[in-house]
Length: 111
Image 1 (cartoon, helix red, strand yellow):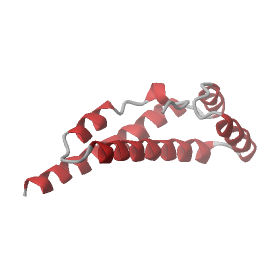
Image 2 (cartoon, one colour):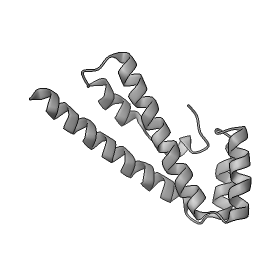
Image 3 (cartoon, helix red, strand yellow):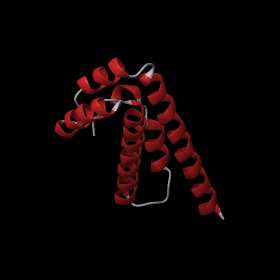
Image 4 (cartoon, rainbow, N blue to C red):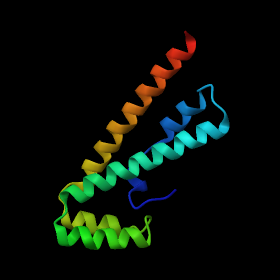
């Protein structure tokens, strides 16, 4: 799915690693969707934690209409200094955690 922040995140490494797991295609797809939602929640939490109350309301109203609206990022950037850098870092950390979990899971499969 496309989101207002999609141009900032890279999740291909997770998808590639999910493909190496001994799971059905349906299970892999489900895990990829869960990761997608995890990223969305992380981004939303970060943005909302930094917006003023009045700005939160406006942001959420716009988000409810269209999660992929690029104007959401324009709005966030106008209200929050360095939000793109913070989002990139937060998603990178989340991706690294998931990749570590996948590696741990693969080691469990080998035993």
